[in-house]
Each structure stands twice: as structure tokens, then as C-alpha cells.
Image (cartoon, rainbow, N blue to C red):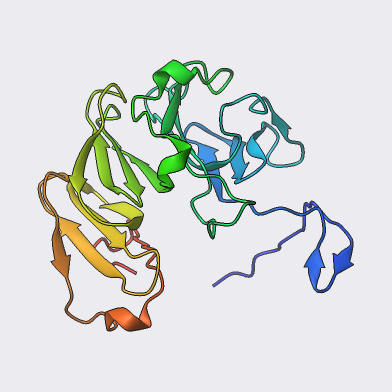
Length: 234
């Protein structure tokens, strides 16, 4: 395996009691499907940030969103001007420094604007719901999944309507590489995680328990898959 050269790009701050003051959490890093120099990342309290030069410089235009915090973004691979933004802090601990989600916002101009009217989930902050992951269908991009603490939601009409497909508190969701009819999902925000699988494009899910740790040993599942061997799920 070749060695990778990693260079710290920041932010950096003063170390105080082992912590870097001023270096906030980053919930995700996503690449434009057609241009790897375009990158998106988000802070749960700092909004969505964009780089067009491979991460050397970053800008944001989301300071005026109803909820500044973001937990994921999904980009239409066939039209990268269409993007979905999961609001709130998917990894928050419920303290006063975290923000609950108001749902999923949609941009049709490459993230220049995020009209609140596009939020058809229509959640309220007082409901204390969170979104952990957005997953967009690789060949039918009007289909998007959201793994949330209120269940697995799916839209098949580009966000006009979201329907709950499975109850539970879900932290991750992935397609089987090469076969998007198979969907894997991970449940469990606190102790007691479970692994789910769908073989009908997310219409129904079943629990898979063979070979997995006992629930009390699992705080939260994250899922990894690889197109090099789609029979493996990590």
C-alpha cells in the first residue's frame, strides 16, 4: 500500500486543556461529482463552506439560513446545480451548544441560494430531531434518503415529498455498490445499535443480526462499502 502524505490545512488555535480553541467540529466533507477541486464541508454551528481550489481556500454564504448548522449534503450526480442540505447537528449531545434540525433544504443553483420554501420536511427545532446522513441514488437522482433520529425518510420526487420508510434512530445509510436496489442502514444513536438491509430499493427494511456485536456493546454504527468487492460491508 503506498504511503499517503497528509498536510494540515487548519484551522489552528491555542491549545487549552488539550483542546484547540477556535477549531470547531466538521461534520462532513463532500466532493463535486464532476470536479474534485470543488469541495464542501460543514460545521454543526458554522454552516456550509465551499472550496474551488482543492481545499486551499474556503467561503460560505449560509450565515443567514434559519439554522446555520449542517450535518450532510447530497449532490445530484447528473446535475450538480441540484443539492440537498441536512440542517442541524447530527453529532450533537443535546447541549445548549447544539442545534436540532429543521429538515432538508434544497438548492437548484449550485449552493448559491437555499430557499427555506424548499424544506418540505417542515420540522421544528423544538422536536429535537437530527439528520445524520443524506444518500442520493446514483442513477435516479430524484430519489434521496435521509437517515435521521426520527427514522429513514425517502423522497422519489426530488424533495417535494418525504415519506418515512422505517421507524428508528438511524445514523448511516449506504447503497450496495453496483446495485442500488440493496440499501444498508445503521440504527442506534445511543447504546443498542442495529443493522438493517433493504432489497427493494428502500421500500422495506429487515434487521440483520448474524455476526454482529451484541447491541449493548455498540454505541453507534457507521457503514463502509467498496466497489472493489461489493459483497463486503464494513
